[in-house]
Image (cartoon, rainbow, N blue to C red; front, top):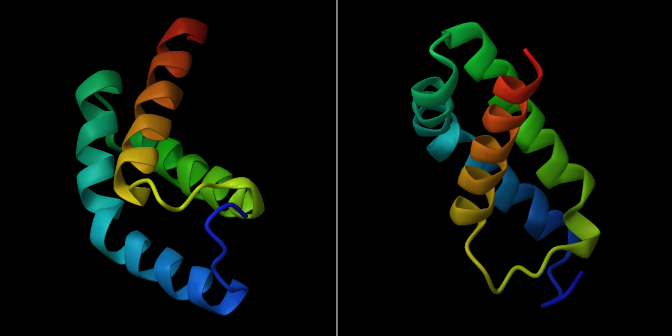
Length: 82
């Protein structure tokens, strides 16, 4: 992980990010896909990607920005393939 953060610290940051950003991310995704259930799935996928790639993330950048970008890209990919 660039800008090293311990696994325990990352887990705490991840949990905090989930609590703080889940609803706003759902609204953001829903602005693209117009379906609340699909938006929730997209946001779950964004958080899963964030967690899965945690060892490769540069945490000097904003987790919020990263998550919103992921959610937007996943929403756009969903629209491209539906």
